[in-house]
Image (cartoon, rainbow, N blue to C red; front, side, top):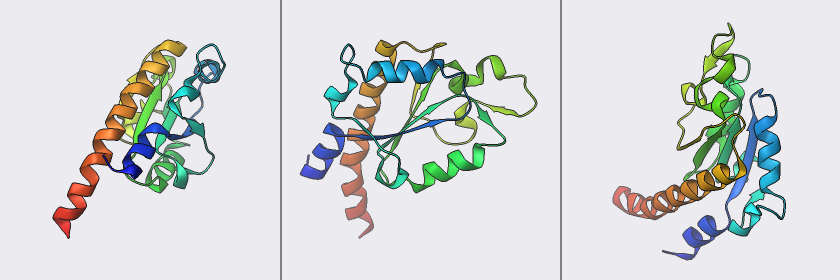
Length: 152
């Protein structure tokens, strides 16, 4: 593993986007940042710019109003990237699944790597999802140089 891959996996930068949830999952994500759960021990940092992010963390269901914004944020992130969906609303639409303006889960708009179900998802489950996403990011980071060499 080269130094860039190691740095990317050991210090992932996260972009958090709420598509219109009840904020229960957002509160649990904030709980992960407290000293009790301390998700920052994985080197995570919240950033506001998608061009700097490695991980897109999404809460809430996909709807017609924010689908374009979500897709735009995803496309602005550099590869390799992973998407984590937190909560039942993001996984399947949740309690909003029959609403006229809902598309369903986030996977109707962008590809999702890790699903963390729950209403609201517990901090322990969120941390497990983050660890799984970091493993997938490491796999993608290792395969990217091989792909670049094959194309050259």
